[in-house]
Image (cartoon, rainbow, N blue to C red; front, side, top):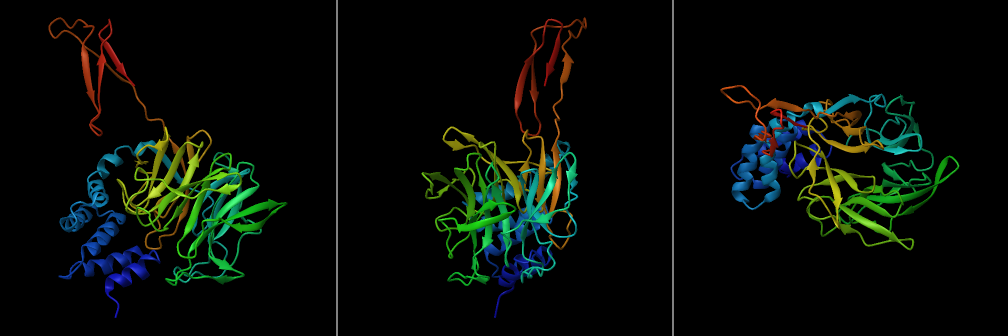
Length: 412
């Protein structure tokens, strides 16, 4: 007989019925023999529904049994940071995209004169048993952020009987790398654990169709590879995998094409990967990597993070903040060429259905100039050379500004 916690994880969680999963875990954690892991899972579900105070208490219960778990310590500390993140809510302007028409749509990527994305909008496609929705296919819509997008059409030649997408394209647009279920001739192939894993495939454009579909060399039927993103020259790929030896559930890996052959994948390390799940990477300008994680300092579910190349390594992952991120799943971002706007995927506003939608966003310039003057208390005459210390009450950062000859100070 199955325990309630197994039902929650294997059924409700996989079907993205997070409300039901939370209800079941609420019962599990009340049991006297409830495991620390159950309390951790319940805390994560509470974060996803925005119940941060209660989530923190269950993180603390888990940490009482596992005090050295730094990944969970960060999640607990995140529960105290929400108010600070929300103070910067003017940083982004976000709107629902016209590409949403009642189905799940996610992981946009710029391609040619428009955007490609994964969607389950094909009502004639075979249904996925976990969701009851059609399997995913790749779609393309011509247009841009300023003028809007045309009606999406299915991309020819790659959409099969199971999941296809998300994808990435070389800069010339003649080669696609995309995620697909492990199947051959319409028959799914399962791992030894009875799971149909994901694989990365390559397709080449011929006229209007994608043809010559071949497997990425480091695929396996025993673990998943997926969510590829590729650099401008087409020679460096970042992707996601739960292959053995990783740091968490799914990690981000890097591989390089040398003399036409992909090198052995390298784990991106602890500045990017956490003990939890990192997914949906997107390389921008070959030097900035955006990705999503339900670890690090987090608002709940998947949050979008940013890391930049620094010498031979990468900077620590930085949460992109509210309202780009919410307590729901926020992922699959596509940034425009000058880095001022883009499209993201999120299941915010979807209540119990956890349906993924596309949202356009602009990054607002919220810099301001602080002006002031130092004067003599008695004479009210301006005083030059006075050092004034300014403190950012959110980050604790301090800056010293010296008044000029007229007693004025200004700081941007």
